[in-house]
Each structure stands twice: as C-alpha cells, then as structure tokens.
Image 1 (cartoon, helix red, strand yellow):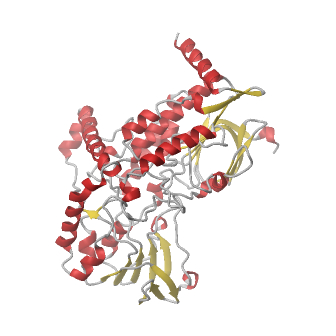
Image 2 (image 1 turned 180 degrees about the vertical axis):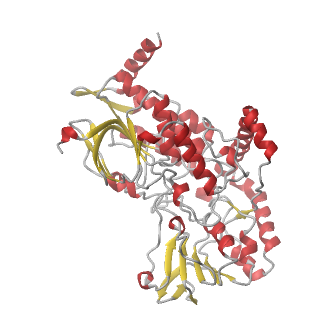
Image 3 (image 1 turned 90 degrees about the horizontal axis):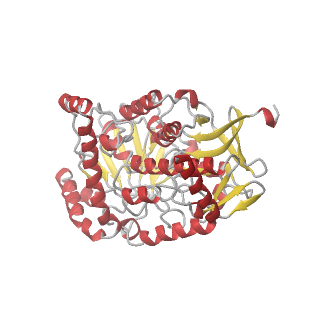
Length: 513
C-alpha cells in the first residue's frame, strides 16, 4: 500500500480509558468526527479493564469519580468496585456513540512526526495511518512494573502482577507471597487471605491506612438522583469542595496533617494488638507523603494466623524459596507482584518520535516536562491526557482529565481558526517556565518534605507526577491555549506567537458574528 492510500484522520486518540473516551466525547461535542480511538486491548476501559484482581475498587467516592457530563445516578456503593466503573465506561462509549471510532486490538507501535507533510505517521499492530493531531491517553497506570528479582525466571510456581491477574489459578490452600503494600495490595490481601493456606506479605515501606467508610447507596438515594439530577450534582460538589479544602495541608502546611496521622495510628492500634507487628506496620514518614490508602479490612487480615508480614522487600528467588532483603526464607507456591506501574518512565514515550528525530523518552531523559501537563517541546500537534504533574494525592483524577479536555478542545479550535495545515509546537522557554513554577511550588509540599520515597518521584528524585495545587487552579490554568506559548507554523514559515494570537482572536470574533 502506498503512502497516499493510508487512512488519514484529523485526530488519533491513543487509549480508551477515562482519558481516551473523554477526549472522544469532547471531540464530537466540538463537531469533530474525523477521529479514531486506537486501543491495544479487545475492549474499552483502560486501567479499570486491566485491573480485575479480587477486591479491586476505587478509593475516590463514586459520585466524584465520573464525568460531569455523564453523571451516574445508579452507583451501587459510595466507593465503586472495578466491575461497576468498567460498566460505566462501556455505558459512556455507547451513550455518546463512540463505538464507530474505536479500533480495538490496535496497539500503537510507533508514532513519527513527518515535518514535510505536517502530520503524524502512526504504525499500529493492524497497519498504518496518519493524523494531523495525536492525543495520547494511555495513562500512567497502564504498564505494570515488576522489579528485576534474581532467580524469578526459574521459579517453578505461578507468578503474575496484580494488573494481569490470573483468574484461572486457584489460590485455595496455596502458599502465597504478596510483594508490595500499595493501593492494590491492601485490597488483594483481605480478599485472598481467607482462602490462602499461608500468605506472606513483603513490605518494603508500610503505608498509612485509614478506614474506608463504604456502604450501599440506598434505593431511595438512587431514585432521588435519577428524578432530581441536581441532588447528584450537589453531592458531587460537596465531595469536591471537601477535598479542595484539604489541599492546603498537603501543599503548604504539611504539619497540619498531624491530627490525621494520630487517627491513622489509632486505626493500627485498634486492629493490631501484637506490639511487634504494630511497630512494623507504623510508617516513619509524614502521612500524605505517599498516597493515604483506605481500607477497613487490611489490618484485620494481617492479624490473622495464616498471614505474616516481612518488613523488607523481596531480594531473590531460589527455586520455590523466596528470600527477603532481611535474608529470611519462605517456601511459596505463587508470587503476586503489587509493585505498581511505569509512571515516570511510561513505555509509550519510547514510541513517540518528534520533529527533531528523537523519542519522547529521550527528550524526557532528565525528567518529564510538559506545558500545562499537555504538550511537549519538539512534538508538534501532540498532547497527552494525564501528563507530567497532573496527578493528585487526595481527589479525583476525573477532575484533572476534564480540565485537560478543555485545553484540548481549545487547542483544536485554535487550529481550526488558523487554518488547515497549521501546526502548534510549544516553545521550550514556555515549557521550562511552566515547570519551574510547578517545581518551585512542589518544594513545600508533603510529597517532597514528608521523608518518603514514593512512585511520585522519578529516578532523579524529582516529583514529575503530582499537581501541587487545587483542581480549581488547574482548571483555570488549562481553560484555554495561550498562543504566545507556542510556535505557530503556517505555510512555508513560522508565525510569531503574538501575531498568531491576534489573528486567532480576530477569527474567533468573526466566527461569533
């Protein structure tokens, strides 16, 4: 097939989780229908499709963990389980007519910017296509991270990551090693403890865990939210407001978290009577430095007689023997890794080649940087959803995603006003200025001062993951594109940001008339 015969689209969206489906809905609302959603799996859902481990659920209240433009009055619980969130995303795909745009089993192998043609050349597992604009919505929690453990390849038993759960493997009566104590592990442990013969939890660093106040949402509540939609909106607004008020403690006054820390210690004491085990489970860093986890069943499960907590990481595997960093040994039948994801070194970055012929991973070798969490210098007409420094430590990522969708929508409007063939590429100076501000604000936060090493930090110890402010501040910062921060390429030469900005404003005014 020749280049001319390759399918060409206005926009290629990569991924079909919350970010990808949200982008698709927003594109349609902007009147853009010439787009595809490329999904490597055989169904939509993103991380809520991939993570199907026992006990998988969200730690953000249901009514805040949904799109504002697609409220769900029928959430069955105050904190939704994986199956309900996945069903919600399937519902969004159907309700907003996204299915014709979705290309399942289309893994993106490489994306290259063609400077001459001013488009992206995309190679997928099902063939090639080109696009004027790429919206990467692969998400930071999509590629499991398994540490390199000596001897793991020769382990005769079963090995899998929490995000690739083997449902065909029966854990009943088995000796199981759970590696990691993060958000997934604290849900898995209580779920498999009753059936496992012996459960050994390898804990490198203990998490702070607060009770999870979960309950069924009553029939009357669901009826009210269906019949009186403003009540659901009010519930969402209250949940949002409470979390916005908490942000100051995380970002400016970490010492105010002392009360929460005392409550967390009381939670440990309530369930763990053994003083030695209690000491192993009590963190030495400030609460909030790592994400505060929610569970009312984790500590009771650890106190059961068939569970042992090893206060070290997994060092090596010798046959069917697992060896901790403390050199203790246990015989196990299965090893489950709850060791997180490639967040600061996302594999998709290896598959994006920009205008200068280097990959995004190479451009980010000293740390991820983007303009307003969306666009990267040297990568024209490309943007990411849930980009650098857009993560949250205490609220719903859907709020951040919707803010980035606002930015994407205005980005497309600017391209349309400026005319066919226009290219927007963020100025390196603008990218650096934005990130300097972000990192300056980060210095006072609990994530940088709390005394822990978290997955928020990259290999250089720099926090390139979390947004150091409120979701309201981020929404304001991403409300519209400032063309002064971009090099605007039209025709044979570049147009200055100021001139393009004036022209775009004039075009918008004309369109309004």
